Amino acid sequence: QVQLVESGGGLVQTGGSLRLSCAASGRTFSRYAMGWFRQAPGKERSFVAAISWSGSRIYYGDSVKGRFTISRDNAKNTAYLQMNSLKPEDTAVYYCAADLGLSGSRSWGEYEYWGQGTQVTVSS
Image (tube, rainbow, N blue to C red):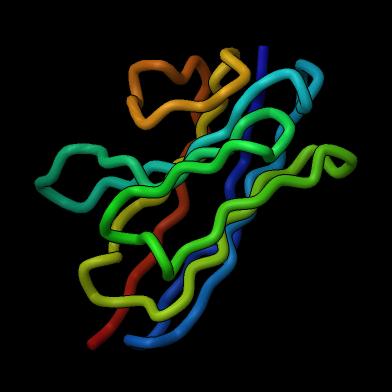
């Protein structure tokens, strides 16, 4: 079992920054990949970023490439999503997820465990 708790969401103006954290507990953190997804009202859940167990492989969704950075600290059992140059279209509930496959994936169906989500709102 893996328990995930997101934090760091909030309200920010266009062009601002936020850093989301995902604290993990349960299974050894370094033995699974991590991903971030988001879901806006009335829309499907979409891929944001993923990172392999070692951090050597990183993937980004096209809409966030160049603005968001995913990272992980295996010593702290925590994954991060640094979000810069935020836009109103980034407004969504952001979820972190754990993939027991080591490489990470763009597909939400590959993730076995999910956090409860944290709201990010970007005002124009």
